Length: 170
Image (tube, rainbow, N blue to C red; front, side, top):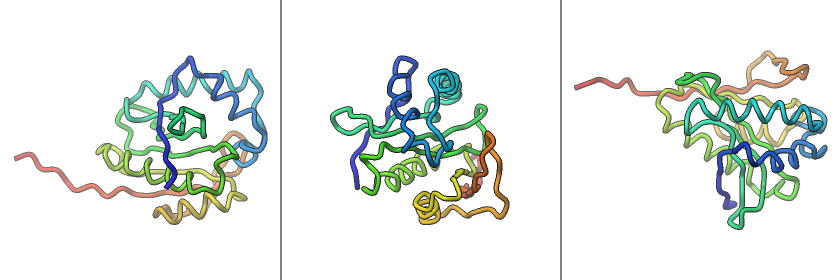
C-alpha cells in the first residue's frame, strides 16, 4: 500500500492546489478541463470555508514522506453535523496505477466511520472514469440508476450507507 500523509489544505497553500487543477491530464475526468487561475481561486476559497465546518472533514493534500504533493482528496460535509459526506480525490499522474486511489478511499472510509454523525457517503464520477468506478465498487459503494448533473457535467452518483448501532444512554 502506498504511504501518504493527509494534510488539511490551508489558505497559504493555494499554489499546490493550482498546480493540480491547472493540469489538463488530472482534470480531464474531474471537470473535463483545466481550471483558470480566477476559477481556481474561487473554488479554493470555497474549500477553505468548508474546511471550517468540522476539524476532521474538508479537503486534504496527499503528500509523500518527503512532503511531495501527490494529490488532493476530500471528506466533505456541507453543514455542521451533516448526515451525508462526499468523498473524492484527484491524483498527480505520477501516482496513477500504483494503488494510491484505493488506499485513499480506504482511509477516507475509515475516517467517515469514526464520525458518528455521518450515516451515508456519496461519490461522483465521470462516466468514463472506469478506474474510480472499480475502486468505489470494491469499497462497497452502489451506483445509482440516475446520473446527476454537477456544474454542467453529467456524473455517476455512488452511495454507501454507513450502518450505525443505536446508542442508548445508560
